[in-house]
Length: 187
Image (cartoon, rainbow, N blue to C red):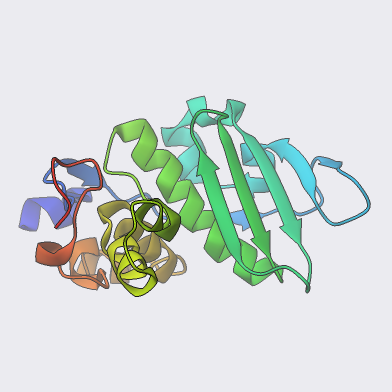
């Protein structure tokens, strides 16, 4: 694995090559864009709300995506990446939480662009009559969700620690328990 750590390349859970983009300089700008309605929701081009130099350089095509951002103490942290609308939505109670949710959703947008396994929602499983607890367990084991949570965990790590701890070593679900929702069968 010496080659992988030196170059930043490694195999993702789906066995495809992936490259970790450092998050140095990533900032959320809640003042960008146009305010919609009386609340805190603003709409802007993706990279105006989510200024991420490394991602902007690697994925300039995502600059056409729309970002919807709401930061308010009354918001519950959460987000959505909508590929058909080319839209990223982040809701958070504060700026720090918006950065964390933002990097999670940005990881989903990259995975979609790179054709890596997507994330999902517990609702997808509940609609298939999977009980609530099991639906949440399945959701947490999705390859795309594990990768997005791992991006959150590694958000403020510097280059040295990233080189020392490869992404596979910091995932919160072992690889043999992760699965791709779009494989032929659920686990």
